[in-house]
Amino acid sequence: MRLRRSLSLTMLLAFTLVHAGRAGATPPIVEPVDAKQTHVEPGRGLRAFLEVGQATFGDAVERQVGFRILSLTPNDPCIDFALGVWLASGAVITPDVDLALPIALDRSSRLVPHAGATGLLAGGGGFLFLTGGVNAGVGLILGANGPITFHADYTARKFNNVELRDDGLMHVVTLGITWGAGESSRTHSVR
Image (cartoon, rainbow, N blue to C red; front, side, top):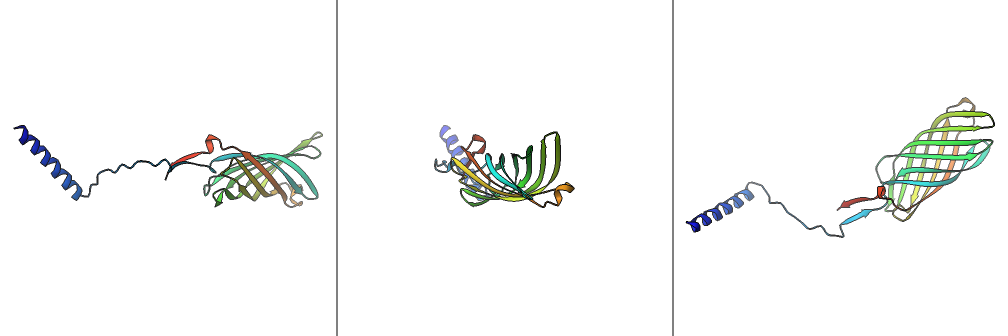
């Protein structure tokens, strides 16, 4: 009786497996994950750069310091925030909030066109001046995969204020540096 029951169950199981394969169902395939395939992809995520540069507006040429925050992830539109500060007859602050698109040139370099809104806040000696405008530019990131990453940027700004409109464009060239890839900039993936 037991032998008959075991034989019946075996035949039922064999019948089910044979007909399941013919019906288009496939058994699940479990493959081991190779340790070489699991890796951290550097050169992605947000980075904050310390920057130095030069702003030219009309006849004035000023050195500036500041910072920039943007993503290094290729082909993924992001917000590019930059803030520059310098001293003229008072303090001058120029914030930019742009839409940027990092384009991978190779594994560790990016071309980053950007455009958006800009501002100019100047104050000192009893006066305060504030205006807005638009900007556009392009950046180049080198060493995105390394422990130290460099960023060079050119931005042209146009302000809405009547007094500044006749002065034309403000041209800004900056060089930035950042180091270390924080946890927020690391992406784990399996290929």
